[in-house]
Image (cartoon, rainbow, N blue to C red; front, side, top):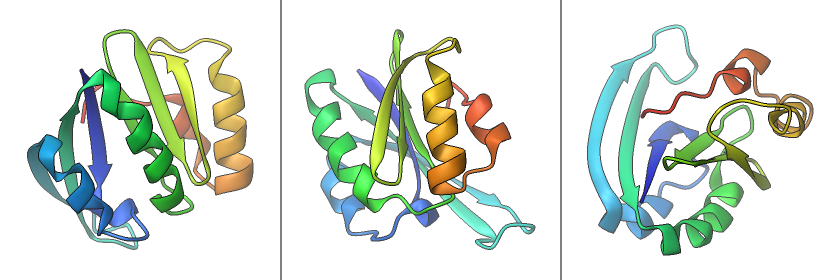
Length: 121
């Protein structure tokens, strides 16, 4: 089972939420006054292992530039950036470097966000 975190404001098209709705677990609303989107709706989903890759393929096309989406299990972390996703170990190691480089250089995500991806939503 994967835990998937999606900030609604990170999506190009919120229609994708209808597709992942069956896996919905909870929502948190957060005020982020310094951000261009001052209110974030962070949704948590619980996705079966056999369904996660289909969702990753879809989400990589819907996540906005400058944002990322992540999903994780006990052993695997997926980081979804515009146009691509990365399968990584949950504990940071050198394999994270390609994802960080892609995120910073191709997607304009601030480096500090990608260096410390949390294992919670």
